[in-house]
Length: 122
Image (cartoon, rainbow, N blue to C red; front, side):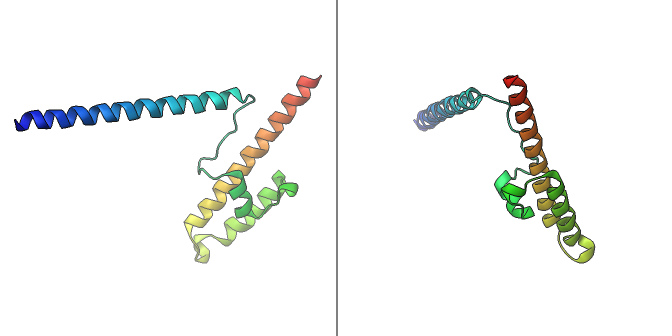
């Protein structure tokens, strides 16, 4: 009798898990298809997973002044100030590095997008 109860619990749990997994897969596929349908090249993401907005806050860069020179200037200053030799943390240096990486990738993406739109209009 106990083995029937155990088997029943396992089968019910597997059924519920299977339905939940299938539904999650459908939602992920729908979201992926919607993202691909938006068109254009996909944006590159930073290895640190930092968004562009957060990167701009970390490096204290305004959207109007976003340029490679400005990003590198802020990066060099903050990376040096947060060095371990000066008693600061590797974590902060990593955040500064990933912020710079995200903004560089964003600038590259914007350049590619600009180039693609200018070649398409010709």
